[in-house]
Length: 172
Image (tube, one colour):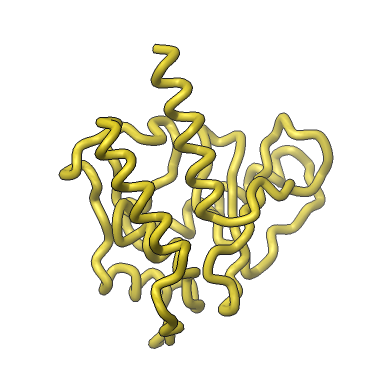
């Protein structure tokens, strides 16, 4: 199944993801050779598995560091070891909701892109009109039954996670 990718001018989100990667290298949080990106073929394969185009910001993230970025986000399932990894993350999110007796149902178009040690997950909704979608998260320690809007965009979420990593790195 071929997925048609929107062809717009390079978006701000794409610039921002590249700038984030450059910042990580310039500040010596990681080396350039630790940025392990997806090939275009791997991204296309993932979109075929998902059955929907991925947001441009997330495609850019995958191209630059989708397979890994050194020790960044250590302890989290943030990087996609293979295109099939998305189904594992989604299955784990559904299981977490069930284990906690949460009546919330993950929307069909929810793309779970990270989880942390089995107690939290984050996702965005696949929408062909969104280049940099809002991010929602759920954790078993959160109050309430529905995930919360964690960031207005995937790029903002990524930046906030890196800020947190930097704080933790300074505290070591």
